Amino acid sequence: MNITANEVAVQLIVISPNNAGQRLDNFLFTALKGVPKSRIYRIIRKGEVRVNKGRIKPEYKLAEGDQVRIPPVRVAQRDTPIIPSQSFQDSLEASILYEDDLLLVINKPSGLAVHGGSGISLGLIEALRATRSDKSYLELVHRIDRDTSGCLVVAKKRSALRFLQDEMRARRILKVYYALASGRWPRGRRRIDAPLLASEQKSGEKIVRVDSEGKSSVTVFSVVQRFDNATLMEATLETGRTHQIRVHAQYVGCSLAGDVKYGSDDYNDDARRLGLGRMFLHALKIQFFSPCGKKILIEAPIPPELSRYLQKLDH
Image (cartoon, rainbow, N blue to C red; front, side):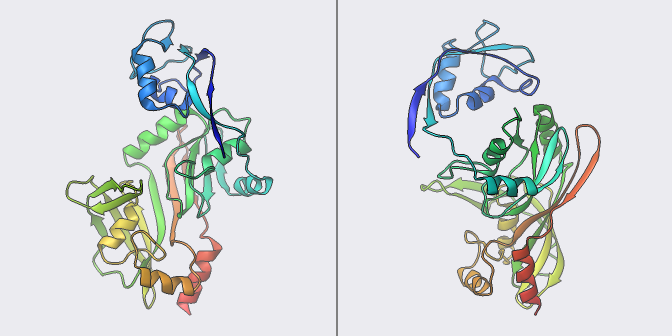
């Protein structure tokens, strides 16, 4: 898809309740997609961006009713927007496990990135926005890996997004995964408390490893079923670091089946021959209190391809 540069006219935007409480710079990152962050900070610093006709700092938190002036800025735009097929839109709608006025929980399929970028033209959130073009606000509350399936929460109001992300930071949201570990999970290795450090390769690929300089990371594993050369686990997150379950499983010598980044090539080849065409990691359930105080517990059924693979192992 070709990208062209367009210059927009001066914009005067009145802040809605959905955007109230957001930092000015974060608001502009969304409003001016395709514009480098350095350029955005420069137009703020030069006073070209105004709030209620006055100069403002990037960290200013917008209030409902504020008027934001955005100067003409050249932004990268696609020649034609990517529209998901009708069958894909229907499949996405059928994957919604729960929905109310504030949020929805969707059973994300494996292989679908949660958002576009880095060579991915269309992610789940872009497809969802295209499907629900009548909704002015849809934002991811958290993320799961592209190859992971299962429960993903999307906020329909900014107030709900802020509330749920605060709950997540306070570790009041329960997230449980099904993970198939290669080999025999060692007895006694239930709570893995190992700090994780993320680094970026020259290619742009993110790699995570256990490192004393990393961030505190805790996963609680419990055995669901043992097979000859694999162990089905429930993994409960106490923290939510990138690739946390995958790297903690690798750390104890039982990398996840089908994990091409942290797993064993030989083991994955054997699993592929037996019919496993993806990484075996599924966000099974999520439990939290909604902003209105309602306790919500959602469980995503295990995908058929994973169930079939478990049956083959059992036999």
